Amino acid sequence: MATEPANPRYRSERSHQAILDAALKLCLEQGFARTSVDAIAREAGVGKQTIYRWWPSKAAVLVEAINRRSAPSVDFPDTGDVYADLRDQMVAVAKFFQTTQSSTYREVIGAAQSDPAAAQAILDTLVNPRVQGCRRRLERAQRQGQIRADAALDDIVELIYAPLYYRLLMGTRPTTPEQVDDILNLVFDGLRPRTPSPR
Image (cartoon, rainbow, N blue to C red; front, side, top):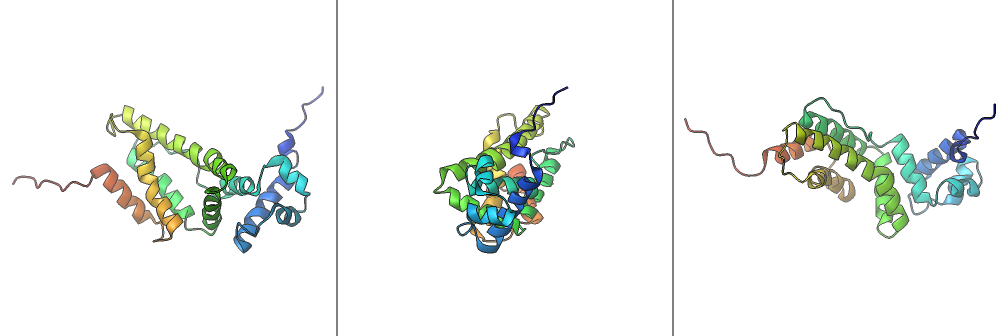
């Protein structure tokens, strides 16, 4: 009985992984701008045409490498407590932003400002799947009455993750679990002063 040929992209998983490892290694050692497809191919022991068969650019290689090896999971926990579930996921992001791998992510985001293909790769592979995962978790929380029914979910996603990205990209302060707690407390409790309860 004939079997279908393997997906050509994954025909050689060893080569595939070697390319991802090489891209991350070189980018960490010499930066995104100085890392070339030729250098990745040499480091991985493959032909340059192999890389272009699977990815359109070095940015796409690095985005997949970050996604497969480093980035927090797309899946959100669902314990029934939306605050706790958001905190778990956001702490994972904050911890990833503290790793050496995050410097590669920061450089790719920088390159994406003038490279539409890199920007699309980041959105398609890293950002949008996680935004949708967060949105689905928030939708369940809305149905359960844990957050306001009129809350704009896309705005909530941006509101809670933007401070983490701000620290990553601007280097103002490290991302920490304590920052996550501060963000969620502000989001869930608001900024208005609390009215003292009557005695």
